[in-house]
Image (cartoon, rainbow, N blue to C red):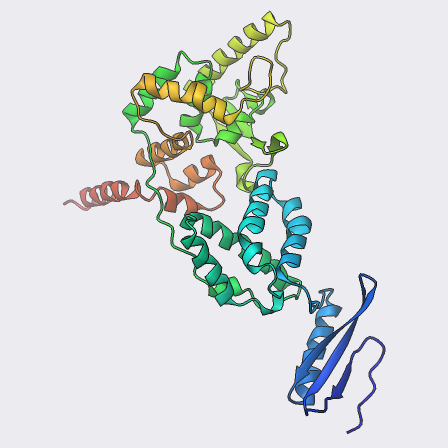
Length: 380
C-alpha cells in the first residue's frame, strides 16, 4: 500500500516487516541531537491515531514526552522550575528532602511513562518498613501526586498513577486545647513575662506562631483595635530568617482585637520604647512587635525554651506545643457558640470544612445544646 506523503512536521506512518504500523513525529533538536518519537499500532489507523493525538497536543503548546525521560529528570525539573518558585522557602526545602531522600533512590531510574501504581505502592510499603511514620509517607504521596499532576498537564503521561494508590492512613493526634480556667491561669502567669502580649494575642486571635513573630507595628491599629496579618516569619536552613506570604490567600486577613489584647500591646509598646530609649533608638512603625533587645527576630525555639515553657510551669500546666494555643482559641470560641464561619475567617483556614474537621470534638456539645434549645422551643 502506498504511503501518503505528509507535510513537513506532520510525522510519518510506515508498515514494519513484522506487520505492525509505526508512526513517528519529529521533535527537533534536543541537547544538540535530532529526536524523533515513535508510536506503534497493530493497524495503520491505530498508529495514525496516536500520531494525530501527539500532533494535537503539540499544537496546544504541550510537549510530547521524550522516550528516555525518567522520574529523576522529571522531578528535578518540576522541583526547580515549578515548585520552588511557587511555594514558601521552607516548603521547597521540605519537597527537596522528600524527593531526594525517599523518592529518587527507589523510583529515580524508572521511565516516567512506565511508572505504575504498583511501583508507587511498593515505595510506600518499603518506607513504612524502614520505620517512616505514616504521616511522612503521606507527605511523600502528596508531593509525588502534585508533581504528576503537572506531568499530565504537560502531556508527559496520560494519567496520574498516584490516583490509583492508597497512602497509609494517619491517625489524627488528639488536639490539646486549654479549658477556660487553664487559659486564664496561663495569661496570669504570662503577665510578668516580656512576651505577655504574644500569649494574649495567641489565645484571643488564634494566630500562628510564624504570623505572630512576623507581626510589625505598622500592621496594628491600636486606636481601632485591629490588625492585619500580612506575612509569616520563620527560620530556613541555610538562609536564616525569611519572611513569607501567609499559608493561603485566606491567611491575609483582618483581625479585630480583644480589649485584653489591645491593653497588652500598649504595655508591650511602652516596654519596648523604654528599652530602645536606653539604647538611643526608639522603635519605628515598621519594626517587629516581638523581637530581641536589638530589634532582631526571635528564634521560634528560643521563644519556646526561654519563655513559653517557663510560663507553662508558672501556670502549673503540662508541656504543650505553642500551636496548641491556636487550637485553644478556636475550641473556646466554638464552645461559646461562635459560628464556625467566623472561626474559619479568624484562623485563616482556606475552607470551612478544614475548621469543622479539625474541631469536630467541640461540635457534639454544641449539638446537644442546640437540640435542647429546639426542644424548649417546641414546648417539651
